[in-house]
Length: 584
Image (cartoon, rainbow, N blue to C red; front, side, top):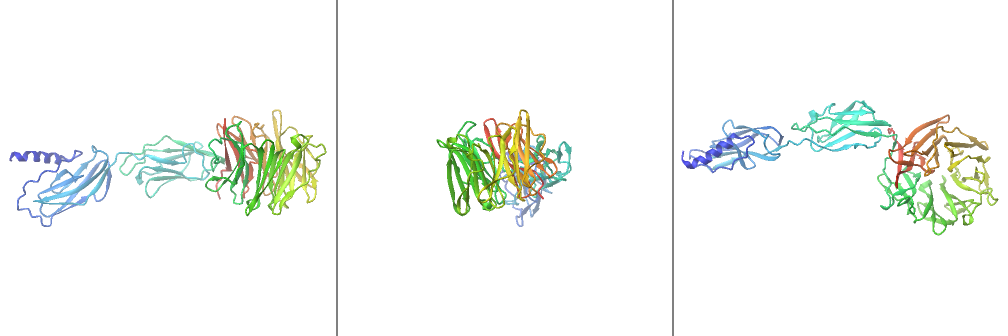
């Protein structure tokens, strides 16, 4: 052997040792004997037959046709190994850096070289990571949902078993099926029995899950989520400006499509100047319902009815207390008016579309007050005469308002003796309904509703010292009859003293009220005709949940919908809640 051959030979020996060593530089070919005939020379990569992902050994096999002087296995253009018949090689990737490599076979005959097709090999020692999980840790979710986990790369299907994930509900293991998506990246865990509210669930992921080459998932710590009795499905209502951080309890109405619409007052903080804001859920986002008023808002009233007609009033301090009235219809310019020296406005829209506002009024706001009632309809503005007792030294305050089936307003108010009177418009005069109902420690304002049979239900809260109660009366056979009251009514906080009420299809009341505490919470109860049933409470740790008189409506299925302020210190947003139930 001549000296010039020593270096190429040593390089060949190192390359032939293979393994995870760096491929050798391509040697300068020796002069090839003239006896090698390159006719029909070809090389085929038999293994691997396609792209490979591995963290171990890759078996390589080549097929050679024709005469050959030399056969090389090439990796990324460099010789990985020189092979002899039967032209096989075990490439151990254990010490190879992660990444993608290109393998091919090369055969040399004389001065002729041919190569095989290229096959990529991905060396992967990175375990799959969990990129997203739904529900997220700590989330509150709808009843009946499944659990989804998304991974950074496809999982090995055979590693996905019933033992790969575990689900506990209220501390007890529950059976669930596990399914892997066609692309291998998403696991879905479906409980054998749908999750129903209220419940607390815990999900545990094990390291039995691997990717296609056996890299085991590094499981996160078990995480929990809850299925609350009341679900805040749409999130906080979007506010117009970043400094609008303190909202008062809203007034809720449901439009003709059953979507929530709200009016509320908001300020930069508890002592800031308030502005009225409106918002409606479109199905995907909160958007303004109508243009909002200016600053200095003291109170708002809001109602929706036929064809989504809107009766809106905003009591503002503009150097005097002015009640701005707006009546919106689908095909006309809004009608408007204003009245000075008012307070405590309330609004309603009748089934035929008449919009009405009632408010307490006094010259220069010096008692006695009288209740003013003003309406808007298809034929323009409607003026109503004074209620019974007006201008007879009767101080009329805190009106409540409802509309009967013929679009006639029914008004309740508090007189100077602390009794509640109710009158119905008869077309030309006001008719007092029954006797006046005495109150003891009235909290907030009364609330009045009319059921589908035309019967009126009047309700209010009372607080005397540490005792609190709810009073309900139904107007039947010419007078008011006391109804059974719910028990265990805790006192209200100062920020939410009133009672919210709606009536179901049978005329039975559903009530919501705020109870003081740390934090404050909303209690909801339904009357069945023979007794009261609790619909649980709307509460969240560390924040006060506050409902106002206009914060409760029943949807088309008779299920309650609540609109509340959610308050933590000097930050308060607005949210809408629904009973978290399995959909039929």
